[in-house]
Image (cartoon, rainbow, N blue to C red; front, top):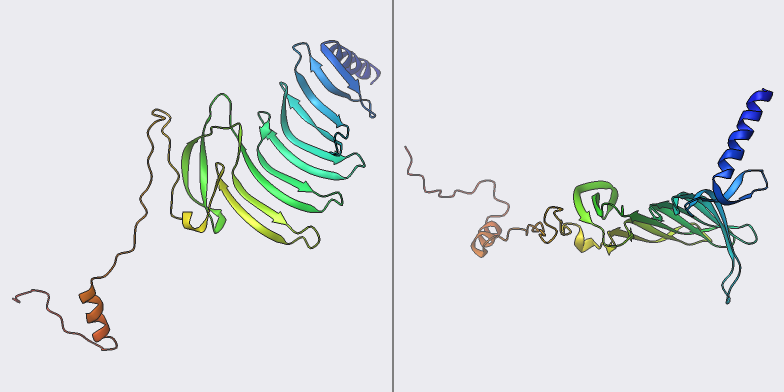
Length: 231
């Protein structure tokens, strides 16, 4: 056991020797690591002092190759939880939650981060009235590093009730009129080509048919001529 501890200690010393800078946390762990390339790596704690009327805060999470990755927590300088955010490629991705100073939930956001090496992504398009129901999939080019995508909810912090719900598809706010409308599909092989699915309009019956149906409404059987000559 003594040799195992010595071996792990040597590994830790060797790893720290490869870092450009770091700090030791209260638990003895290595934080705020910067590697030889000057990139932030691993667990970090960021402290921001109050400035020009804006309250300060602290953040904690992980960096991967100088970019935020995974779950990040934000606290007030008094220790109250203010936000829980998720990151990918250094941009917001997935669910983000925001709280007031009493740690009451205020807002839930949904984001989609774009892969900087491939800005095209296949996304599910959901029913505006039922976000759990996927209508179709589309190939979309994401022009920004991170876009609003999914369901956003706004809460009354005193009751916890949902005050408003919004549905986004790549920064585009959906409305009830958009239920049958599709976004332009971008073909990766031909970025300039777009296509939209036509919305099928309900068929309108001719005036003569409507009058006939009205005249014969309620009758058990209506004799009609179909042009058949018999046989």
